[in-house]
Image 1 (cartoon, rainbow, N blue to C red):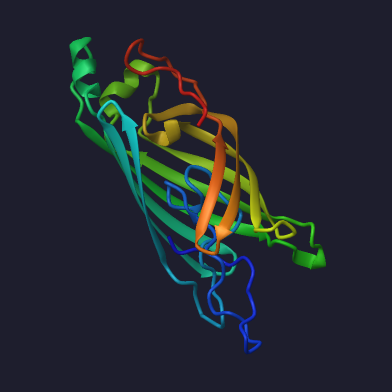
Image 2: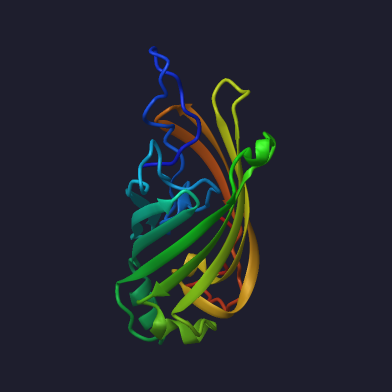
Length: 247
């Protein structure tokens, strides 16, 4: 994934390097972040006099096990310094889950589903703005999600909707006093989603906590750890769909 600006470095001639550190990447839903959690930094804001930021694309793959896997394709554009627009397409292969559901008297469902994500994020405060070096970047976001494959099973587990809105608020700080830069992000999410929307959506919002820590081992390699709290306000199906665990 292409990524946004953190620090510029000087070249031997004293000029600013054209390309900043590769931060942040894309999270699965198509916003700036790491893997499943976000960053308050925006992806590729305009730089060096550009009228708009450069578009960025990303790709992700997860082997979930039990014959199930998830593919994510993402695209972002930051037309102005503080506004990021993103889109994410997630394709989930359900493996043998449709067969198991049908064997227990449930409805016939497809072998796969798609989750569409449309995102808009506004950076309220930049890192170190107002000459306050301690001040983190703060970004608010709205995320529309549409699931086209879980309608038939949703009524059995109390998930009445196939789409929903998430609202996020994140703070991120870049620390440079260590041998390599470290980025810490802390955020909250108001969500109707179950398993990020892959299982559908409820009529009630849950408020969950998310965070991540990323170490830039090199200017092109990031090692990260994440925590993503998961809501569980639906009725599990024993042996098929259990209560979500935090990621």
